[in-house]
Amino acid sequence: MAKVKADALREALSDLGDQADEPTVVVGDEEDESTWVDLTLREWLTIRADRIEREA
Image 1 (cartoon, rainbow, N blue to C red):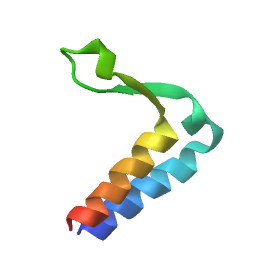
Image 2: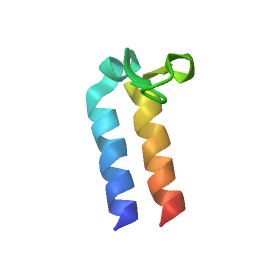
Image 3: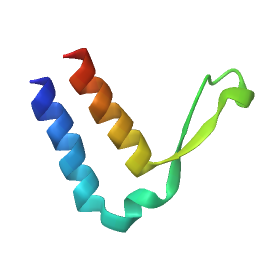
């Protein structure tokens, strides 16, 4: 199941094309702005897919 989820994220990433390279995601502790990091959608989806596979 994890492989299917990770593959679905990667497929969505592929479908987004160049739009995935725009910095649109901010991650970090919502209470501590100093931890905030701007990620492109491509970076976030790749990290998430990799994490799903590792945790399987």
